[in-house]
Image (tube, rainbow, N blue to C red; front, side, top):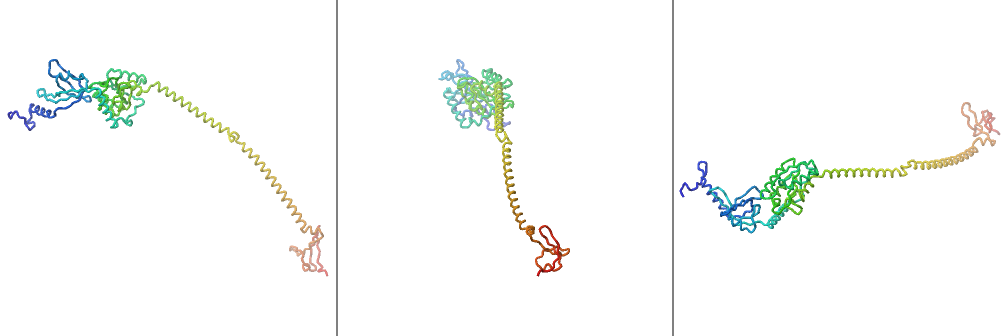
Length: 415
């Protein structure tokens, strides 16, 4: 190899690499990867008669990415399980770079189809992983609005699921509105389209709830709704999401991470949109029950008031007063009798005392023939004579007897 053919070690605008050098380096880098196992979904198979190479497009079910695969036609024809577009497979091979076309392809030597049992086992392992992370926790479930203004519907184009959801919802509440996103609901492009539709509806401020709807199908058909990326997107969404995938026995992982699981698309419409007639009937029933309850309460209170009014204290409020008035009158009469008796007794006692005082008084003594002699001292008050010395001769005397008084003069002591 000449100096001009050897790749240059330094690279700059003044010293660029030629295409052959870049191709050689890419070939060397890819060759270092060695043989690898790759999982994906077949989206295209091209086996031309008389050719020694079959071309296959292998797509990632969860992303819009694909890889060109080459193999011998016998590897496709002799597969134990028929390989068709949509089959989930595991391939073993080595990446190769073709400098002439500038393309990369995976040259495989072994293809293993993923059977139903393996798919179910993988779904079960993913279910256990998501459950361990708490993504099935009921506390994470967002409440479904009672009357959503706008419903986001993610479903297949012109599908029975779309007709069921829209017709049932509008029959229950004619004013309901929909923002419909038609996507692939099975196959290799389903997951990327579902993720895009959910992200767009979640970003729409007018959408109050999102319904994922699809009719029944096989395990392979419903496989996109058990994709890990889709499940995590449902959990991360801010808008409540209802999973209505398949029929009652079907249970993809989207049913577990969604905020509400519906058995069918029709059931989803019934659980998201209230029935206007049923709600009116319920309001009428509540109104009737409220009226009956109020009427019953009023009647009960009236009975209580009637019972209270019928009590003696309120029925005849003056009854006790009248009884007390009679008692007071009797007590007054008794008190009056006692007072009169006491007055009579005291009057009798006073009469006796008066008689005794009369008997002992000077008038009674005078009546028995005694007299009271008083000496008159001019203008001074007269005083009773108590000794003969008090009446010297010539002293003026006043002699009081029972029927009056006479004046006299003292002649001196009688000898």
